[in-house]
Length: 278
Image (cartoon, rainbow, N blue to C red; front, side):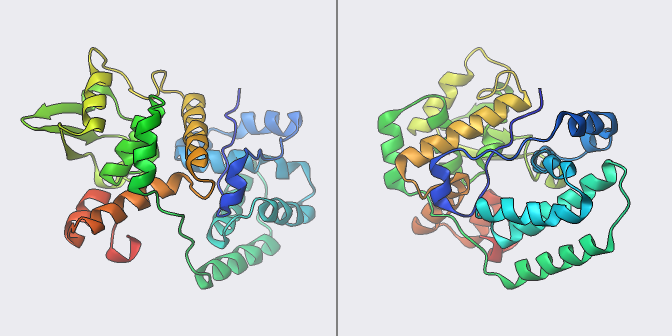
């Protein structure tokens, strides 16, 4: 009943097929279920990361780094992602009741230093040409979710958590309130407007008619969101094997810049903390 891990990698070639992480033994899962009260208080993304790493507890402490490095290399993880995963594993070790190991701390510092010295990896931006091809296919509702994230410069994971009550109309605009998502706990809900004469706005209005629950994930379950993420990846790969989930938001912001949007406007829409992050 545990959620199936999703794939994250800086290597776009690997997006052409789903790569699963090694499965933990039944004994490890049982131990985790008895100790995971604190884990439930963390974010969904952090939980997914740690679930992928449970298999390491099937190895002796001195062998875990070797196994972790092997899996990270197989999946082409970026330096920053590798560091984040290893640090997440150290937190998971505490949840499992294990004592700290000086050797693991040294590895964490090494990975963090390597990540800091490595150039940031950026995905291939989704383009307006990709968007037009999506509209021609109109494989609903996944296409509407991708297009909405693209035209509004938002994370696809945040869009997937929109509900019917988050949508209102105001004259010529569709007003969308983002109440759930990665940065909401820090900045609170925010609203963005989209012209009602656009295809994606009209489609969103139709989807919301007579519905008060979640638009893209009606059951609002973790398993359903993971399935939706998998469909997003597959849809993008069908368009271009170099695309990934981050391509949507990055491409949307680039399209805004091409239209002449000011830096201040793009920061307000994207909720990035600084220009360097755009």
